Amino acid sequence: MFQELKRLIEQMGKDRGIDKQIITEALEAAMLTAARKKLGSHVDIEAHYNDEAGEIEVFQFKTVVDKVLDPETQISREKARATLDEGAEPGDSLGMKIETSSFGRIAVQMAKQIIIQRVKDAEHDNIFDEYKDRKGELINGFVQRFEGGNIIVNLGRAEGVVPMSEQIHREAYKRGERIRTYLFEVKKNTKGVQIILSRTHPAFLKALFEVEVPEISEGLIDIVSVAREPGKRGKIAVRAKDRDIDPVGACVGMRGTRVQSVVQELRGEKIDIIPYTEDEAKYVSSALSPAKVNRVFVDDESRAMIVIVPDDQLSLAIGKNGQNVRLAVKLTGWKIDVKSETMAADKEDDGHKALTKIPGIGPAMAQKLFDAGIKSIAMLAAVDPDTLCAIPGVGEKTGGEWIEEAGRLLDEETKTTAK
Image (cartoon, rainbow, N blue to C red; front, side, top):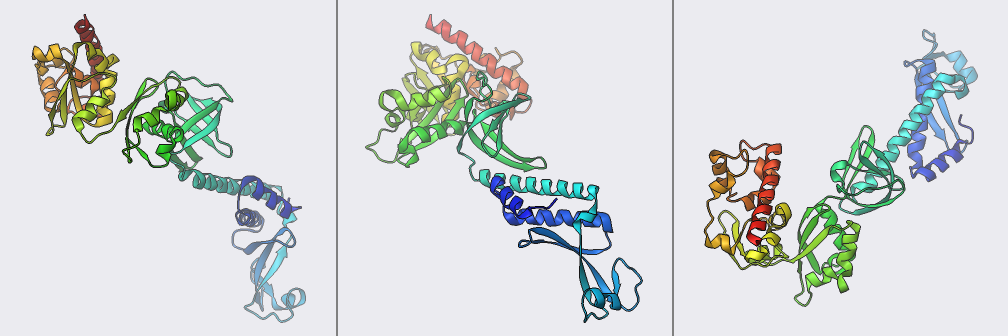
């Protein structure tokens, strides 16, 4: 089994990137197991790798005694002096080399399993150490296979997984196809190392711009905030540290080349680039791009804004199913209630009445929503699901249905207003 062992150890270390000492320690442990399988667990044995000889040497130690009571652990002084050490005295511990070929097939097979497991553990440790510090990076790989809807990605020496929850819904990949992802978690468990990849994470969008826009990677431009509805639309807020730099223009690039590279990687996801400003009203107005805003009423205490837009801009400001205003809320952190000039003039401000148009929302629940700062259909359509579910009596499924229905009603309202 251990013929040309030295060469095999060196080759294994080179091929798998494992320290030579780890391999020799695994071999020593394996031979100890094999020896104990043959000789019993009570015997005193040691195993050492002899680099010069290129073999694992196993020694059984026995104590020198005048009268032998246990031949497995003791040796008589006469025999010790005759075969091992001429100066042996009672109480000395002497080692005798054991031929490993005598261990038998089962013991050797067990030793092989131990070596394989130790080498696997070492490989997992190496992979974990390599990838744990790469969280937040873009990772390129190739689609290797599909498991239960998850995409298994070949990263070279390791495999990554894109769970279904981290895949863009309308994207489809084939085996062998290149895939670019965002590394956001590395976990170690009994099965090995899990490298979790994503194409839906907001930071994926940020990382793509860091690659495409040198001014971002050089620290001249900051990405302040990111909001995404993966595969549909994304918004990023940017600011420059130097007044002479146009952050939006830099991200768009000459003839839109930079932003188009990001859009192409995301297979058509629309991207809005918003200039960040400390002026909150101006920031929220920009976040509602491409819609134009006439005026804004700010409520600092509840961190909410009423935004008034021209009648013909209402549908643009709200977006399909409330998408545009919802992304603006995520981007800025403000609650936003969008109204047209006609709606503002008519003072359609009866939030309770409007909210009760949603199936399942009665006066009592409308009051709870109102108290939570959700004072209109537009604000309900734009609210984050987690915020809605935090309200007592609102479950995850129900909250999602209310947001979807609010978006549908908004679509109807904006179409009516446009007419």
